[in-house]
Image 1 (spheres, rainbow, N blue to C red):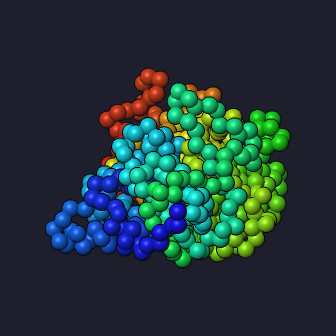
Image 2: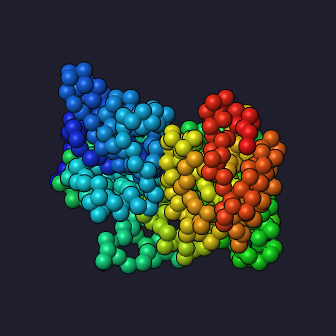
Image 3: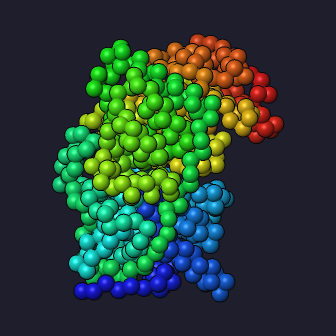
Length: 494
C-alpha cells in the first residue's frame, strides 16, 4: 500500500477527547513536535466552543515545549506519565490540574504492555524514514516508540527531514516478551546488539505521515562553574581511589550518568583525568560531553536511549556518521534502563539529587516535599542495581538559603538500603558498611556546607542514643519549616 501524507492539523483530528496517546521522545530528543502542537491548537478551539477535550499522555521521559508545553498551556492533558521537565506542565501538575504519576522509566513499557494504563489509542512518533511495507526508522531516541506502535490502534508518523536516513543502523530495537514467556536480555557488554535496526508495523495502522523539518528542542547546557567543576573532580578522585584499592576492576566498568549540567560536568571531569581509564557507557541519556570524549578517545562506546545533545552537537554527529555509528547505539528504555542488564554489566551509576539526608536517603523529585520538580526518571532503575551508585549535588542552593543536606528528606525516592556514596563540592561521604549514626557523621563531616555543619551536628546530638536511627521527630523538619517561614534555612534553631 502507498503511504498517506497529511497535515499536522489533519493528524490532530484523528486524536479524540479521552484518548490515551503514546508520543515519541526521551527528553526533547526524538520527541514529536508538529502533531502535539496541532492537538493543542485544536484543544483551544474546542474549549472556546465550550467542548471538553483532554488526552492522556505517555512518552519515554520528558519532551520539549512543542509537546508538554503546548499541551499544558492548552489545558489538554488529563494525565501524564512517566517524567517531565517543562515549566508549564510542572505548574499544571502542581496546581492539581493535570494528573501526573511518577514512574521508574524501566516500568513504562511494561505497564503499557500489561494493560495497566488502559487501551493505547494513538501512537504519534518521529521518524527519519518510513516505507510502504511498514518499516519505521526512529530519529534521535527510542523511548517507548516500539511499544506504542505495537499497541496503538493507529500510528501517526512525523517524518522529520532534519534527521538523515543514515541514522538507520544506530538503533537496536528489542522488546522483551511478557511474563511468563520472558527470557533474559542478551546483552553482556555495552556494545552488544540483540534486536533490529528498525520498527516493523502493519502499514494499515499508519493513519498518516506528517512531513516536518524541525530541530530537537534540546536546550544548550550551561557551562560548568567552580561548584560543578569541584563536584566532578571529587567524583574522579573517588573513582581513582577505588581503582587503586582494587574495589573497581582495573579494566574499569561501564558508566551511567543522569541528565543535566552537573552530570555533564562530572563526565567531563572523568574524561579529563587520565588516571581514569578510557571507558564505555551503558546509560539512558547521551549528552554533549560524551560526544566530545568520543572524539578525544576517552569514551570508547556509548549505549543509551537518546542523543540528548545540543543542536550544534547533533549536527556534528550527523556530519560524521561514519565515525560515530560504530560507537553509538540507541535502545528502547526497557533495555537501556533494564535492572537485569545493569546488574550484569556492573555499572557505576552517577545521578543527581535535589536533597540528601544525614542517614542516607535521597529525594530526587519533590521540592520541600510537595512540589514536583521533574520526576524520578531512570535514577531508581540504576540505584538499586548498579555495582556502585553515586549521588551528587551542590551543598547549597538559592544563594545558600537551602541546604541540600537535611535531617530527613521531605520526600524519599531512594532509601538508605540502596545508596552508597554522596558527593558535593565539599567532599565525599562513603556510606558503605556503615550504620545510621556512622552515615550521619560521614555525611555531615564531608558533604555539608560550613554554614550548616554545626546546625546538623546539633540536630544529631538531640537524638542521642534514641534508637537505631536517632531522629527527634518533633524537630526533624525544622529546616524545611524555617525556609517556608523566613526563606532561609540558616535561621533554623534546634
